[in-house]
Image (tube, rainbow, N blue to C red; front, top):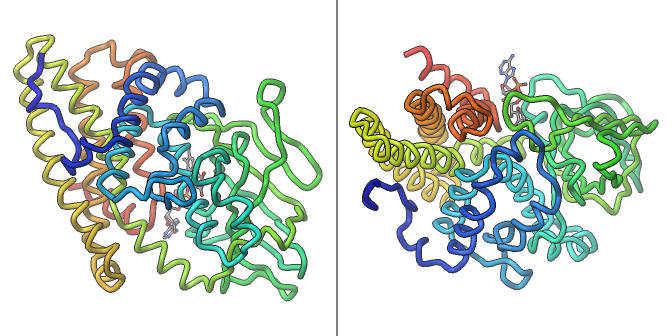
Length: 387
Ligand SMILES: Cc1cc2nc3c(=O)[nH]c(=O)nc-3n(C[C@H](O)[C@H](O)[C@H](O)COP(=O)(O)OP(=O)(O)OC[C@H]3O[C@@H](n4cnc5c(N)ncnc54)[C@H](O)[C@@H]3O)c2cc1C
């Protein structure tokens, strides 16, 4: 057996003492790990997300007054690492919930806030989000303001959780009567029409086409659906915010620069499994590889979280460190890829079985290269692959 000292634990040692983390760690070990490969292949269902929500994981960073835990970054990161390391599909579906919840907590629309805030913080209502298209050079989705309602037109390529969610935060550029505008971004909280996945895997209406779930090389179990709209009407009461596009892009670039704790969680799980494999099969070269990857992760993770903390405390610092933080994010993605690949190499042919964690983690690591990808991140990642 590997010694306890060889097992990578939380970045913040105090996170181990947290009751919230302990509940999530048990859930990850008892429920997520045993089912991760099956969920990856067969797809996630709503009861699984409800079980996760019951651990308090979805409300961790949000106010206790609304049913959250007011947990600090150390606890939130550790929970993310544990969930992502146990089951990438569950992590990605749960991750979609965070930004819509923040948006509803921050909206000036009091009625919308009062209707959804507590339900979203507790995870009784599950959210999805569609916003990555806003970073693309060309747009195929627009929102038109008609006074007391909004009209949605065009298509969204990727909406994870669509058939599982109670609400979807849909963000789009404003289209005016004089044509397409790129000056303002409108965010709406849309309630997707209910669908029973047992009987149907798509929706075909005149104003809305959704599904079926995309066939994907990785994250195929995340219920990621393409969705198209043709004059789809959304009441003005569903408005979350309207912000100048430059403001949206600036804020988004500050957040997108940071390494995602999920990448460290996945790499940590691969390296811990590698360490265990080295001990149980008595392979010193595998132990050496695990030790080298472990020290790389500990160093990189400490730097990435320290920089993220400084950036979140000071917007000027955040803007000044985008390049450095993007470089750390790319380094974390590269490490995750190498850690998963090392686990494949050390596992032999068995790694190719769909029941093996190694092949799933390798595919999940590839996915992370494009998830939330910015132009700068793409450049930094390509730098690692061509050095
Ligand atoms: C399985 C899966 C699930 C997903 N789920 C969601 C979801 O639920 N919600 C959601 O909003 N998104 C989702 N996404 C989208 C995901 O986050 C994006 O794939 C990611 O941000 C990359 O964007 P893209 O696919 O639009 O690629 P691209 O269009 O290639 O854009 C990626 C980046 O490259 C830049 N870029 C592209 N072309 C050029 C060019 N010619 N010159 C300079 N820069 C360029 C873009 O500006 C952008 O920053 C999902 C993706 C996948 C694969």
